[in-house]
Length: 365
Ligand SMILES: *Cc1c(COP(=O)(O)O)cnc(C)c1O
Image 1 (cartoon, rainbow, N blue to C red):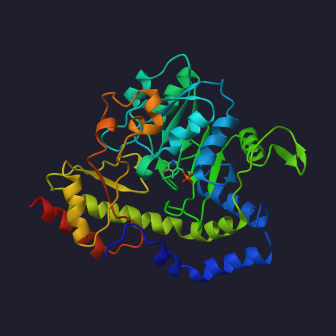
Image 2 (cartoon, protein in one colour):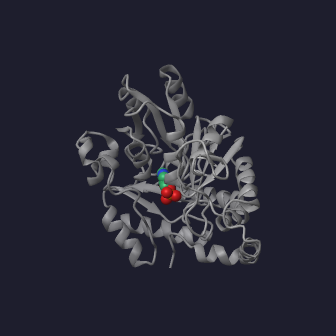
Image 3 (cartoon, protein in one colour):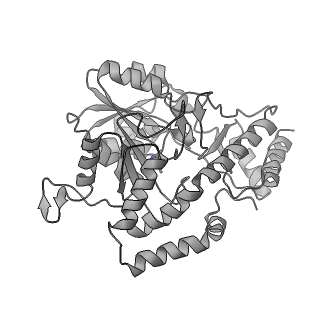
């Protein structure tokens, strides 16, 4: 069996440290806030090379809180790529703004800059740059566009812990970066978790207050906020796992390189392209094929698990039908039937990867 994700085998690699960390949090009753959360925030800011990090309850909240903290005029238009997880767009509408979807590019699946520019209007206030599948967006182009038009840039880094654009870690290239620590992410907790990073001290402070009932001190509330906190257990677990993230990421990159090399001559599939300026961290390794259903069934019959990210483009979801952007002729609206995610992660051996590529090649022969 070649698993798509194997959190159990990962736990057994680091069991002693994880169990110890959990025990410490419990014996100190440091469940909400406190030293474990502070220590993780400091380490994660360092890891992403950002000045500030605010832990929150999950990645969706991170996006919502970031957008709220930017205090954009209400009912602003915010541009979101059509190929992403729903949270990238939900955070916009939940914050009282309007989503304008734009296309993805056909090589690395991140935001299509030409299409982004076509979607700008006088109401546009921000761009959500999603570093999809762990591949950074073309941030120079995003930032140039934003600066020209006075737009804010929110980086959705939920799939991109440790990813780099021209040697710079994602998250603090734009105004604010949002991370998810959902268990299956490149850095995942044992439950929900998320974080916001930024180099803007005021913005970090505002996010921290929004996430904690608008307060600075206990029972002294400056404004109405909400409750969205990273808890002590998750923070302690994440801090242990953060020590391994570089090695796990390097292994993901190695596996991706093996896929790219071993499948380079396969007809019938399109491989993802990694731009020369990218450190892609391969949250997912996504190929495209017209026979997606048949190929995934063939792999499954050999015990190889695959996934689809995402089968339905955001504009075509029932949830966003009211926006009437689902019939637009764009790559992202049409590629959903062809995407297939091959297994990737530190749980796979070189032999596993060779089995996957052999099975793919055999299918097309
Ligand atoms: C996972 C994910 C999110 C949301 O994170 P949660 O922690 O599950 O709320 C947002 N954006 C993208 C691109 C994601 O993959």
